[in-house]
Each structure stands twice: as structure tokens, then as C-alpha cells.
Image 1 (cartoon, rainbow, N blue to C red):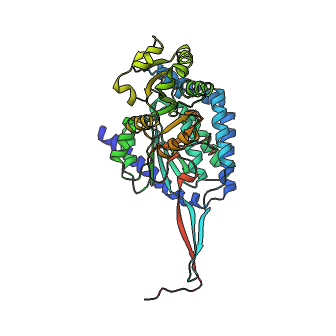
Image 2 (cartoon, rainbow, N blue to C red; image 1 turned 180 degrees about the horizontal axis):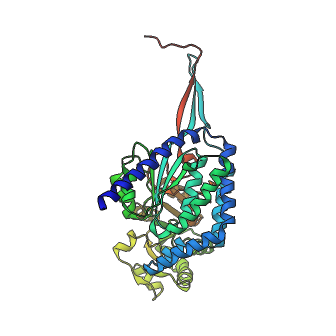
Length: 425
């Protein structure tokens, strides 16, 4: 019986891949008007199906509580009326973006008269593997469609009911626009073996995008037979430089941690120049502790507030995704950059300072996908970047880096136009 089920899963996954590959050719040349119609119709379907989506989400939340998910994980999983409207609005924002397919990136002429253009093309078929955040279903489906790609989605078991409800709205949008429903497919089973099959489907899937915890990312990177857009830990830092404005430092530090603790752009380590710690940190500590945040600090931070817990080496390497923050005192810009390089995940790091030279050095030398000056790390989001949405934040260095939006979901080809040129022997 087990063998039969295993064979059936392999057959089903292969069939999904074949269907995705078949419709990818259709989507590659689909006119913008149809893609945008599908996105807007999906947004309207989400609004119309609001009660059903919320009921599905309540089932996921009940199961999550029964499994003992943390408050932060439950927050990532939760959909309310405001968040569902936000997802629908993101689909409409994607529709408003320019169509990247066929966009001319560069063009030049050779001395022999050849006219050469580099234009954007879809990647083909994209596989997206994600865990607890159901909004990824709409973001990934919408962005892949806009970029002319077919997509196979595999959500986590924690959000299974919510994911199916959102996917149904995407399919309704495709059908309204007359586009193939197989453009956005959802792996129905929560069997973890389905992930293994996706990672081996190189003949059907061109790129895999994992979005989840370190164990998922590491598995995908180890087993995938196709390129991976990696989204590693969001071990984000805010550095309060000696020339930071106190009010700005307080506002940014508190927002970067407290606004939403479970998102990948949440600050996990706060660095502060020791020379200004006594001036900057007390009010920040008061705000954080009043908000229910546990603070773990080095000896210098503990002196400032008796409620600060002693930090250990592991705290500098931990993505809490919870109301816990590590704070360390540093001796200037060089020390701060060295700490970020040693402990960071190359996701998002920010400096707060009124010193233009210090800001310029930080922006140039910190090797993260997103580097900020005088801004909260919570802005590490494709929607906030004007991309409509994102599939994730890529922390790699190849092709896509930072928020993965429609442009990052394309490749390019060269169009060479001649007038009869031949190459001399």
C-alpha cells in the first residue's frame, strides 16, 4: 500500500510539472491585458470570498494552537479582514506594474551594422516552497503570472486550509481572463515527500524559491536539481552610530523590532556605540520592555537596566522571530561592520546616523541584500519597495538579490537584427 501511494504521488507531481511546462509557453506571450485582468479578478474573488477565507484560516489557527505553535508563528499564520484586503490590494498593485516581458534592457549597434538588443523573458516554470504564511500563495502566484511564468506552489501544512482558499481565488481570476488554470498550480497534499519530488523535477521546473526556516532552505539547497533563489535567515541589525539623532534612534529601533516580530525584516540585534549608550539606550529599553520584549544584552547594556538578561554567544546568531532582542555595545563604525559581517545573514541591516560619511561607509561596505540609512528594517518588503509584492528576500549574490519581484522572475535573451551580414573567415 505504501509503495502504491508513493508511486501515485510521483505520478501526480510529474503530471503537474508537465502541465506547467505546457502552459508556460502560452504565458510567455500572453498579452498584458489578460494577465492584469486575471490579477484584478483574483483580487475581487478574494473580497467576495472573505468569509470562506477567514473560516479556512480559523481551521489552520485551531490546528496550530493544538500543535503548540508560538505566538509569533500564529501571527504569521493569521488572516483577518485587514490582511486579506492587503493581499487583494497587492494583486491589484502587481497588475499596475509595467509588463516586464519583452522589455528592452539595453540596445546597441556594432560597426558591421548588427543591431543587438537584450530583452526580458520569463524564466519558465517556477516552484515555490513555503511554510506558514498564507499570503505567499497570492504574492507568488501573482508575481509569477505577471512575469509570464507558470508556477507550482507547495505551501506548508500549517496553512493548508488558508492556502487552498486563496489558491481558489487565483484560479477564478485566471478563468475569468481566459488564461489556463494550470498557470498557478497548488500541490494538494501535505505529504513532505512532495517537496522531494519537486526538487528532482529539473525537466519541468526551472527555478526553485524556498521561503521558510533554515532547515527548509538547507534541504532545498542540498537536494535541488535546479537553480535556487535562497531566502536565508533574516538576522537583521540596526546600528545606532555615535552621531544618531536620539529621537530618530528611539523611533527606528522600537519600530524595527516591535511592529511585527515574526517577519523576516524584524531587527534581531541592536548595536549601539558605547560612547552614546547612556544617552540613547535607556528610553529605547523602556519602550521595548514596556511592549513585552525580552532584552538580552552584554555587560554594558545590563548596567543601564537591571531587567536586561545576560546575552550569550548564540544570541548574536539567532533569528528569534519573536519578542526577543539582543543588544550589544560596539566601539565605532569598524566594530559594528565587523560584527554584522561575522554574525549577520546578509538580509537587511540599517545605520542610524546624521554623519553622512559614516552612512556612506556603512552603505558601501555592509554586504547585505538591503542596506539602509535612517530607516527601519521593517521596510524590507517588496510591497514597500514599490514592487507590488515579493516572493521573498533573496540573500544570495546571483541574479536575484533582495526582494524578488517581477523583474527578478525574468531572464533575458538577445535579439540580433541584421541586413545580410556574414562573418569573415
